Image (cartoon, rainbow, N blue to C red; front, side):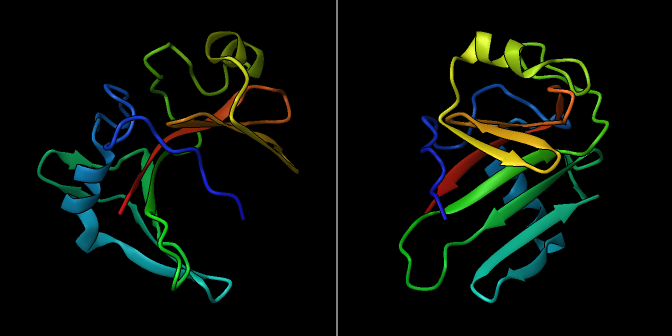
Length: 149
């Protein structure tokens, strides 16, 4: 029910890569024919692209989601590029799944813009990045996101 923070860069975090892909929006455009369209609660439409490849874009260890606002809502679409569980890559700041703690993230980035408690841990959201934290207070997955009209 809340809108994500507006990213400062139009195409998402600069230089941050997942599966060797820096520009999530360009990757989505190149792979969108392989997207599966889904509906959530009868009002929210979204696409998911996984295990896809075209040209230089290959999602081996991640997924891209495009979430459109409900009909009549003028909000932009949200694009999320999220790592799969067990992803071995790292962020530019050296954060890694199953190693980096929530305290290390907050020490580096400051307090998150949003925090969501979950049954498995917590999700912390910054302007262009989010981290899914497990019950041991370590990163289990991370994502970068952007909004686009």
